[in-house]
Image (cartoon, rainbow, N blue to C red):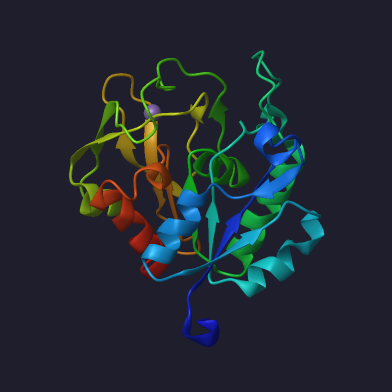
Length: 236
Ligand code: MN
């Protein structure tokens, strides 16, 4: 679309009811700034899409060229037809419903989607896949800019063009893809436990790339993690 000569990237926002002492405990709508800064760094124009009425997503999607779905809470199991088997309270069902509507509308309007962590899981759910509710050993204690596990990237994947056939990634996820939705293929696995670490679309009606790690934490430190944003903004 290129309104005003810019590629406009909508980044779906998160909410906190309590932003903590430094911000007077006020409730906030926000994007982690890595998404915003990385999109700006590669020449896109990011705008935040706040959680709201799912009936408004048609308008939001019509305003943007591409959609980024960020990390955050676990996707609630009822959205993929399961009961909650965990003790986790890390859910925001209003966000789930709004973002599922954003995905459906983006697909209807032919707008590409880049999903990070929860964002990848949510798209998989939106198009018919399921999630593992709890995976072990994928929440690192190391700093978020430090890669802690390896990944193997499939030949002929977009991902291997950006990261090569082998790479290392950070890891902050409790859930992972269980059943992959049929319009997607696996493009990266964690070799030790076969956890799906990246997927991409194989269906021409869907333009989607999803990663389970956080390039938004790494874009300033490692060129591959900036280049995946470059790909998302300019080529996806
Ligand atoms: Mn991982």
